[in-house]
Each structure stands twice: as C-alpha cells, then as structure tokens.
Amino acid sequence: MMLNPLPHQLYIAGRWCDARSGRVETVFNPATEAALADVAFGAMQDIDDAVVAAAAIQSEWGMSSGRERGAFLRAIADGVQQQQEQLAQLQTANNGKPLSEALIDVGDVVATFNYYAGLAEQLDDHQDQPVALPGAGFSATLRHEPCGIAALIVPWNFPMVTTAWKVAPALAAGCTVVLKPSEIAPLPELALAAIIAQAGLPAGVFNLVTGDAEAGAALVSHPAVRKVSFTGSTAVGQTVMKTAADDLKRISLELGGKSAALVFADADIELALEIVCGGIFFNAGQMCSATSRLLVERSVAQDFMARLKQRVESIKVGDPMDPATQMGPLSSRRQHQKVQQYIQQGVAAGLKLVTGGTQPPGMAKGYFVAPTIFADVPFDSPLWREEIFGPVLCINTFDSEQEAVAVANQSEYGLVATVLTSDPERASRVSAALEVGLVWVNSPQVIFPQASWGGMKKSSLGRELGPWGLQAFQEIKHVIVAASG
Ligand code: NAD
Image (cartoon, rainbow, N blue to C red; front, side, top):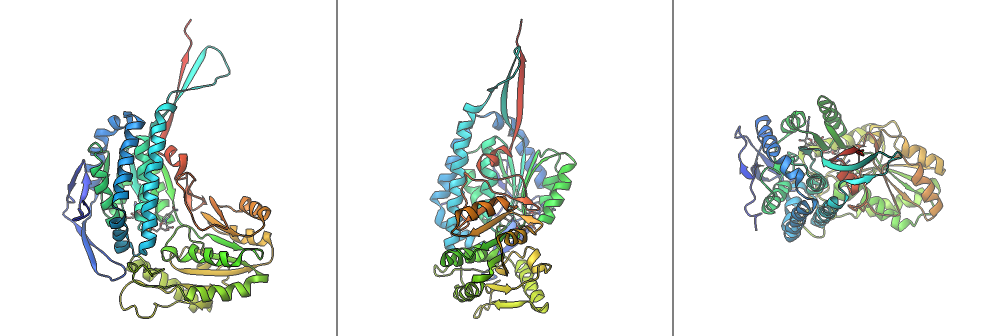
C-alpha cells in the first residue's frame, strides 16, 4: 500500500523532507542500467537535524519499557511480512539479486525484527537484577541501559538485511537511531522506513538520511552520536574507527572478508559442489562471507574441478526478475569495473582461467559478469589475498588437514569458513583451528538471528545478531548500596 508511491526523501523527526541543499541523485537498475528514481542526498545539516530529532526523544524512548518497544518491533515485522513481494521486487530492481534471493532477505528481516521484539520483551524482567557479592554490608544490582543515539551505516549488497540487523537491536535496547543507507541501493531502506513510519514510533526515534560518504562521515563525527554501527569495506571501517576515537564513541564494525571453503576427500562431493557454488555465486559473489578461496584435497581435486566447471557453466545468468535466473548482475557500474579489473589482472598475470572471465553472451545492457574460476592461484596474488566482491572463485589444492587449515588462516580477514567432510571429528578439529567467527560444516550459508554474525582480524569488531547484537547497543550500570545500620 505505502510502497506506491515510495517516498524518495529523508525521514527526520517523523516527517519526510527534502535535503536542505535540495540535492538529489539518480539510482539505477543494475540489470538494465535504467534510472529507477531520484533520491534526496543529505549532508552535514540534514545529519544534524536528524541527530537533534533523535536527541529530543532519546531519554523518553530509553525509559520506555521493553514490552512497549517490542510491540513496535513486532508491528514492523508484520508490516514487512505483509509487503514481502513488493519489497523483494524493489530489492531486485535496485540491487540486481534474483527475486528468489530477495525473498530470502525479506524473510530474514521479518525474523530479525521478531527475534529482537522477543529480547526487548524480556528486558524488563532482567532489569535491576541482584548481583551476588562476597562481603556482607553491601548489595548490588545490574542495569542495562541504551547507549544513546546510534548511527547506523550500511552497504548495498544486502540492503534491508544489514539494516534490520542494526535497527532492530538498537530500537530494542532503547537507542534512537539515524540510518544512512548506501547511495547505490537506498530504495529498500526507503521502503523499510515507510513501514517503520507506519508502525507509529514516536517522532525522532527512527531517522533516515539517504546520501553518500559525505553524509556518513558527518554522522560518524557528530558529537551527540554515542554509538556507531558500521557495515562496509575494511578501509572505510578503519576511517570510522579513527573518527569515533575522538569522542570514544562505542563502535561495531562488520567489514570485508576473503573466506575459505575446505573440501576434504571424504566429503559428499555432490553436496560440496552445491555448497561451494552457493558460497561464491549467491548474490553474484557480493557477500562479505563469500567463500572465494576454495581448497580441495589433492586426491579428489581433478574430479571435483571437472564437475565444478560443468556445474558453474550451467548457472543461468540473466534478468533477476525471471524466476529461472540463478545469478543476476553486479549491483553497480563501479563494482562491475572493479571485478573486471581483477579478472583482467589475473589473466594478464597468466593465471589459469578455468571458466568465465567475460560478460555472459547476449547481455547488451547491465553489469553482468559470467561466473569465473581461476585455478592454482599463487598465494601472493591479489586475486587470492584481496576481497574481489564478485563471482570470482580462486582454487588451490592441499595434501593434509594441517596444510588446509594453515592456508585458510593465511589471510588478514577472518569472517567465516565452510568445512566439507564426512568425518565429525575432523569437522570439530578444523572448526576449532580456523580463525573465523562462524564455521559452516556441510551446510550452506544459513544465518539465524539467534546465532552471532561477525568475525576475527580485519573482518569485524564485535558481533551482530543474537544477544550480542543487543548488547552492542547497551551500557552496563551497577548500583551498589551500603546496608544501613
Ligand atoms: P563502503 O565502505 O564503500 O560503504 C559502506 C557505507 O559507508 C555506505 O553507506 C557509504 O556511503 C558509507 N561511507 C563511505 N565512506 C564513508 C565515510 N568516510 N564515513 C562514513 N560512512 C562512509 O562499502 P560498500 O562498497 O558499500 O560495501 C561493500 C563492503 O561491505 C565489502 O567490503 C563487504 O565485505 C562489506 N560488507 C560486510 C558485511 C559484514 O557483515 N561483515 C556485510 C555486508 C558487506
């Protein structure tokens, strides 16, 4: 109902408004390169308006009960559920992911809001809990309080999902928020904002400023912001961390990855092929968790590679609105150029191109890249070390479990890993040895709101989802009382 027409403005203090400068920028459909909408782009003054609006209601919102906040979150979940088809189509139009994947994203958003509604409802019973102390004469209680105004900055690859992972726990904790979506795919967030607006939150609790790096930087440096939750590239995450240090703002960072999938000779090979393909070609490889480094045990490598090549060449790339399509375009011209540069670099360096590397045939328009595989990629190659963020898989072989783990851990990143083996003891040993935040064993990349999201090294700081996602927006306060008399 409200998605048509979808507002393309900023949402500040409970009202839709233009950017103060009047600036608008066009966003595109990456499958057709056609213009989709002109969206208001905010900057410093708009960010300040949004933060002032959030500040005006922070105290009241922070003192509301968890049950009240939970009710709002459930209303948002219901609103998203009711509009799932339209929201999926909007994501596909703006981001280029196949409709079937966009529907999975919408389901994830609903599950996330419902999960944090449940945690919000439990907060009231956990407030002012007694703390056991060793000595007589004192009693203590523990309070969980909201951090304050939270700046939420997200990228374009899972637009509504990364947003839900921040907005839901922030509101549950009692924080007011200013959301800054990606300049490339802001339409899903505008639709989500319209749903949030209809849920009846007090004005100023949720604010949205669309825009680019300028708006993001203004938000991170705003002195009244107490918490920054950022998802994006490692380079920008490092800048965010440095800026946040000035005010010692609390920060959570979800950044890049170069994750590994390990296929052992004892794995169910058919299952492994399916999982390896999903790990790199889902969302055209634009996943922080893409398992873009594949390690296959040498004794099965030849057979595995032949079957993988066959399977990858049968992936149907095309119009993401077509239900038969398995892989859509990259989300922007910039990303298309970046991925093509990596492929050209690999070819120029004489790397073994197994398949792909070109624009798929018959695609006159759109940012398409064929699913691409390079084999025997040297460990010092940029293609092996750097996050490409596209449908490019690099493969190597190994001879022993120790070697596989050592190579997998040889990365500045440490987000996720996939282990494919039929030996449960090996699965447990390898999972323990991998320097990552999440291991999938014989499993596709399923994510549950109850389990954490995030990793080690340069991939993350903190964790999202689960109770950890809520704690990231809370401060701890103890009250110690001396017994009288
Ligand atoms: P990006 O870092 O360029 O931009 C992310 C967001 O930050 C955008 O909204 C952008 O406008 C904003 N921004 C840019 N410069 C800023 C600045 N100086 N200060 C504040 N905000 C600024 O990333 P991207 O290209 O949009 O997204 C791709 C990256 O996101 C990849 O590296 C990917 O791995 C990462 N990512 C990580 C996760 C995770 O959970 N770890 C999830 C999704 C994407």
